[in-house]
Length: 266
Image (cartoon, rainbow, N blue to C red):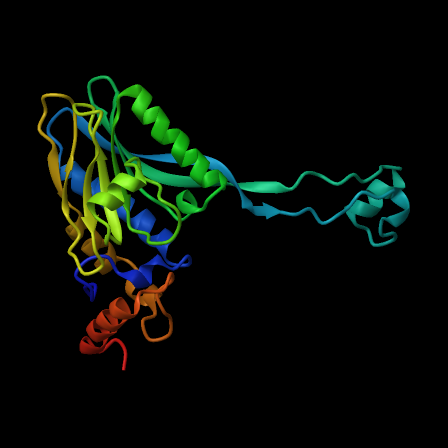
């Protein structure tokens, strides 16, 4: 089933749904680029790994002596107690997070040419590790002279892409989403495609080496394939859930009109 909306689907921004869209977009972006890239370039998946303090598993035991161990139950705890071992609380354990993104590499020397990022929920949570990790990566791209393409399909959270927010808002005050392209050929400028909820997702240039023409990637076609081939239609739950974050009243009326016309809500 095709997406009911002309561009981004706001029902897919919910925290329980967007990670699926994020990961599927990376997969289908890579497939699309494989067909577009000229000889000598490769689109490869990569992972940024970090620990998220929000996902810490707290240990089950506190700091206590052997007298508080359970006894006579045959457990490891009882065996440790009988050996006179003292229990000391461990640091909370944080599960590592792997956040996929894309790299376009030079096939000749494996050099990183362009990074393609789909901004995640963790990247847009202020003060958290996922955001810090993302911002560090932005700095590394700039320092290394690597092109970047940042796709932000989230209305929630603080501004995250490389373009300064004040300049972005001055240029496109009513945007809901956007794409930011930073090219090594023009390092003092950012090229932005502002996107409203009612817009089709844009066709964007993917920069390569200096003197090599960018390839043009139809982001809407990639999004449509994600929707058609994956579980997003079922995860959206148009009849039971509301967009998160909420839409404006005007946007809500527009969206519900589309869903009602397509028989997805009554």
